[in-house]
Image 1 (cartoon, each protein chain N blue to C red):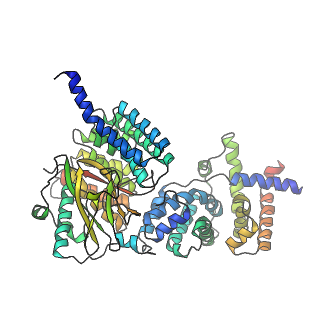
Image 2 (cartoon, rainbow over the protein chains, first blue to last red):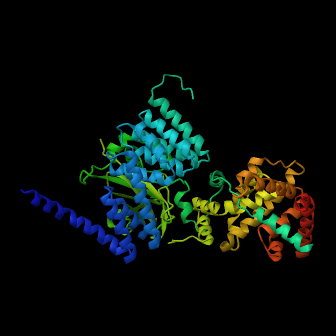
Length: 204
Length: 195
Length: 182
C-alpha cells in the first residue's frame, strides 16, 4: 500500500474523531467561545500537546454553566500549564503525566519542584505522585512541605497503591481535625521507614 | 486653622488606608478550625452526603461495598464505610467482576452515600461531563448507597458526582484537584492496568 | 447551578453543609479587613488572631446572619467586637513596633525611608489613643463610614461617636504636632 493511501486511511480514521469532538463542542458552546477554544486547541496540537484535556475542560465549563469568557480563560490556562509541564517533564512524558503535572502546577507547585519530582521518580511514571501531591496541597499542606514529602516518597521507590493508601490515610486524619502538615509528614515518615525496610526499631 | 487640621487628618488617614496583607496561612487555620465544628444542615441533603453515618446494609449491598473497597485497593480512588477499610484482595477476587471492556479501559466502581438523593450521576472527562450519559447513572442499592460500575480509560482523569442534576459533589475520599476554574469541586482518579 | 458567587450564594451553600465553600468568603474578606484589625490592635499577631476568631465565629453563627447579601458588613461587626475584646484583654501591654513590620506593609515607593518613619509615627500615635476613640477614628477616616453606619455597627449613638472622632483628631494632632510644626 502506498504511503499516500496509508496516509489517506489514517486521516479518514482520525477525521471522524476530530469531527466528533467538534460536534460535542459546537453543541455546547456559543459561536465566539467555540472559535476561541478551537484556536487554542489547534495551537496545542501544533505544539504537540494533548488536545483532549482542552476539549474536556471546555465541556466541563459548559456542563457547569460557566460563561464563555471564563471557559476560554480556563482552556487557555490549561494549555499554558500543559506546555510548562511538557517542557519540564521532557518529550517522553505521557499525556497522563502532562495532565497530572498541569493540575499540580495549577495547585501552585513550581516548575522547579516539578523537575525535582521528575529526578526523584526516575523511570517510574509520575502520574500518581502528582495526583497525591495536588491532593495534599488542596487539603492545606503547605506547598513546600507537600512537595518535599512526595519527592522523598518517590525517591524511596514507594509504589502507586501505597501512595493511594497514603493519600487516604492523610485525608482521614485531616477530616478528624489533624493539622494537615503534621498528618502528611507523619504518614509519609511511616511509609518511608517501611519502604526502606529499615530494621526492627520503629523509631520516628 | 481648622482646614489645616482637616488636611493633616486626611494625610494621616490616607497613610492608614494603605492595604495591609495577611498571609494565606490564615485561610488554612480558619478552615481547619471550621471543619471541626458541627456542620450546618439547613436542608439536610449535602450534610447527609458526607457526614459519616452507620449505614444498614443488606447482603447485596455488602457485596457491592466490599467490591468497592477492593477496587480501591487496586485502583486508588474509591470510598466505602470506614470499617470496611480492612477488607481487601480476597474479597476483590470473590466479588470484583471480570472486565468485559476493551483493554484500554478498566471497569471502575463509583460509590456515593446520599440518602436523600433522587438521582446520582458520575461526570468526568471520560464522558464529556455529561450528566445524562446512560452508562454513568448510579443505581440506588439501599440504605442511601448509590453506585455504578462503568468503563474508565486508563490514565489520569477528573470527575465529580452530580446529585439531582443540580448539586456537584466531589468524591469526598478521592484525591482532590483545585477548582479555581469553575468554582465547583472535582476529584481525580488514576486508572491503572490490573496486573 | 451557580456560575458566579455573590456572598448570599456562598452562604447558602455553607448552610447546606458545604464547609469548603466557606473558604471563598475567607479569601475575599481576609485582606480587606486586615487593615482595620491591624490598626486597631497595633500588631500583626493580634490582628491575625482577631481575624481568625471573627471568621470562625461568623461560621458558627452563620444561620443567624439575617441578610446574607451583606455578609461582609455582618462579618465586620463581628470583627469590630473581637478587636474590642482582644484590645481590652491586652490592656496596658506596651504596643511595640518593629520597623520591619511597617516596611512589610508596603510603604510608598517614592521615599521609602521617609514614609516608613512617618508611618511609624502615625502608628505609634494611633496606639496612644483611647480604644473607643481609636475605633471611631478608624471607622470614620480609614474605613470611611458614615455616622449612621458606624452607629449601627457599634451600637453607640451618633453624637457620642462624633465626640470620640473629634477627640481622636485633637489627640493625634497633638501627638504628631512635632512633625507638622517642623
